[in-house]
Image (cartoon, rainbow, N blue to C red; front, side, top):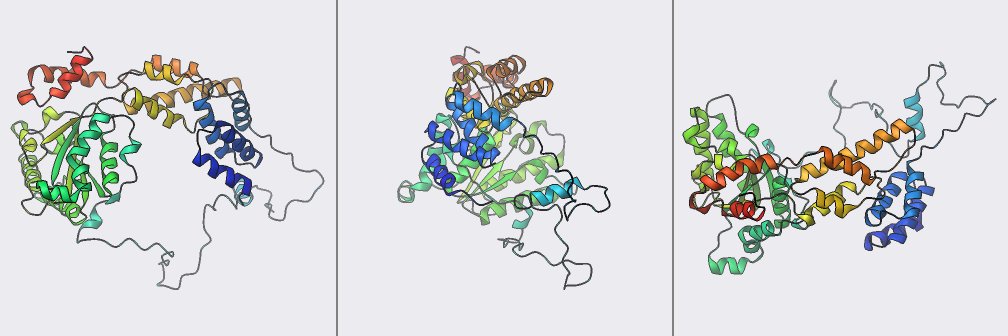
Length: 429
């Protein structure tokens, strides 16, 4: 499909000025006329997110969502040359031929192999990336594609991350002057679904560092000694790829309180984790360890000793600014009309990021079910969100019920002072 020069120019103009709603509306109309419906819907959704009552945009959206009636086959004509001669029909094959310029075929034609019998030659460009180090191929070393600017809200968390990691990295001369090492460990804790993993990836992207995510399934093995070896090899891979952010997801599973452990094997895994954090068998300079947990009170206190995961940051449910950004993200490519976004934001206090995504999904389900029942396609409206808000309860409240007891009776040394301050602010304590 060749691009229309006018559409190409208008697309570039919209990217430069996404807030120009008349320009986006004009581009969406051209895209619809050109048969590029998915792209048109994306731009129309953007217009309706900023101006829910925009009549022309709603009209174009209805046009985009209305099914196009199939043209009846011409009568009295011979079948197409590529029609099924046996008369059995091959609708999928017909669709493939019709959309050959857009959709690749389901099965590529087989080519004769010049290699050993039974082995097909590898396609061009399929060579794996070179492995850095002996065991790096065992772990997924990523290049994070998100930045802290992609994280909505969370100003206090971003400031803490800037102080702990990002500031010293950007200022090597000052780092040398003040004797600040690039070693470090920080634990993110808070209710589930509030973006702790996304924050860790954003830190790696902000630093231009590699990213390795570790969970308990990457470590545990049924054979004695293999779990400790897996943990050591993962830290070694992170050291070889420095600067690298090593993310320990659900760190309470690996580093739970040893006084409560009944398994000697898990105790030795916990001891190995402490040794790796100390850099006993390797230099941890340039290795940034970020851990996440929903239950920091279950993490062994030895892990929070200075020099290990010695800094803790509370990641709370998204604030007003963050909820607005998250909702806009999940509505960006959906057909909406008459949405009162500030009203939805106000009604979703205590909702986690995952809850907000589920809310948008549920509202879309209601609109789609209504379209199926009536036979008339309609857009997602405020009534769908009102119904979804009545149905969905924030998943963070159970966590705060448990955290309140910890803040009241187990705040040794003031480690949960930020949690206490938040609970008092919300009058939950």
